[in-house]
Length: 323
Image (cartoon, rainbow, N blue to C red; front, top):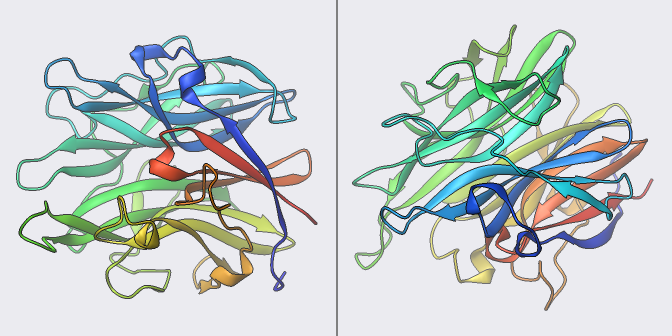
C-alpha cells in the first residue's frame, strides 16, 4: 500500500462534558485507545479532575463503551479504572495515556505516569497494570515503572504502544531529548522523539537506546508523540502526532498534526506523511489541531481515533480507512 490512504471522517463521536465520569472528571478525553469485544468496543481515555489541594489538574483513566457502529454509547466507567500512584511515585499526579492489549486471559495496560517537577513542569515513565475483569479495573504489578529514563534517554519516557508479534513484545514509545527555554518570558518546553524496545515477557525491556526511528519533518525541534502501529496488507504502518516544541499551545500553525511512517521489518521506518490523507476540517472540532491518534481493527475494518482542538478538551473523533 504505497498510494495515499483514503480515510472517511466519521466526525466527533464523544464529548466528556455530556457524561458523568468517575473521580469527578469534567474536562478532556485524551488519547482514546480501543479494546474490541465480541459485541462492543471499549475506548479508554485520560480525563482530568482539579486537585482541591492546589487547583492543578490530575489525570485519570476512564472509558466509554460503544456498540460496534462506534456511535451508540452503552455506558461510561462508573468507578476508577486505576488509582493514581503513591506519594513520590512516577505516576503520582496522573496517567496519560494508557495503552491496552489482551494477553492470554488478562488485559495489559501500559500506563504513562507523570509527576510534577520543580525546575520543569513534568517528567514521565511507563508502567504496567493488569486487569483480570475484562478491563473494568487494573492493578499495578509494582509501584515503579517498567520503562523509564536511562543513560542516553534522560527524561520524558512515555506514550508506550505495545504489540505482541511472533512471540516478541514490541514497544514504540517516546523519549525526551531535553528541555529548553525558548524565551525568558516562558517556562521551558520539551522535545521528544519516538523510540523502540523489545521484551520476551512484556515486563523486562531492552531499548534501542536513544535511536530516533522516525525522521524529523520540522527539524530538530520537532516533538513526536503517541505512536500507534497496525499491519495492513502485510506492511506495518505507524501513526503518531508531531508539532513544534515551542509556541504550539495557541498557534495553530505550530500545533499537533498526525504523521505517518511505514516499515516492512519493524526496524527501519520510512516517513511519508503525505500518504496519510487525513486532515482537520476548518472551523470544526479538529480544525486547529489533530493529535493523539490510535489505530485499530474491528470486524475487518480499520479505524483511527484521534483528538482535536485544545488537546482533546472536547473529546475525540473517528475516521475509517476505505479499502
